[in-house]
Image (cartoon, rainbow, N blue to C red; front, side, top):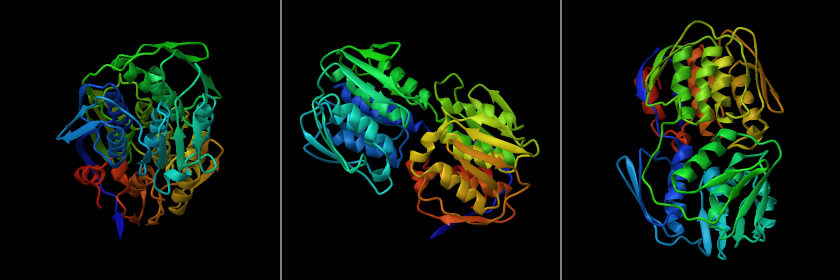
Length: 416
């Protein structure tokens, strides 16, 4: 079955969904704290449920109730068996580090998309610390048997910041001082900052060094945590307002560490009118977008929706700095370019982004979102600048990050 989007005049206000990145981390850190924690305002999505189920497999008691999660744990231990992360690459990468702490033999599997995601940098780092790692040419299924040995781990962060977050989150529990040495050109730095900030909220003291981090043996301390709203999800309704009408998104904190708050700067660079009033951000259409040159090295998740914003801009735009996009749920550089070109855009993919020659409008048609939630949501927003409806497979792939996406867009005036 397909779903069809027929544009519309955007006008309205929604509340931003909770941060997926912070919900993942909060569930894991609360479970590792061996006590009772309440996580308020979590994102209840397929991906975050995968993380919760993984921690239940490791011994945590997790109860989802309304707008909170109650987590109790006494002893966490990786199972001698399978942990299924479904479609969640974040779960796979963070669970791999946790599993390495134990002498159990844990096998991590997922769906077809996750089984294609690169894991070699993290596995190589763990092997260097005595962890037994077996994989399918650096990809899942992955078999892990710890424990971690030594007091130094070298991790290449040029493919994904999640590898660094995985090593950071396990490091206090190794049982000896750990030096984390970062190698390569680090990508998506704000996500590492989110990890260290949340670890500190759960009682961990982290020393930043010239080469990375130093972490002494410590225990996570139970605490209650409120998940902030998500800028990467809010980008879709905000861009919708910038392309057609007006959209307001409530619950956003511009002082938050999330790198994806850069969507505000991107919208302003493109000539959209953006107003910030407390926790409400409003984006209003202000004519044809202006061409931009945007460094997306720290905000790769904004690439699909930024490409939609700029494909009808007046002039040549460039999105660059994010080669890690090749290793997302799809090869997003290739898949975004192919998808929008199918709709009449003029996009040339590059090694780290794309070059966009703006066209006056897109055309309707059927697109292949490749099961990638961010491509699907971006394609739906593209219908606002299309001269015909845009159809795609209705597989609810948006449920992994933004379960209320269709509901929210309909409330803003999108026809679907």
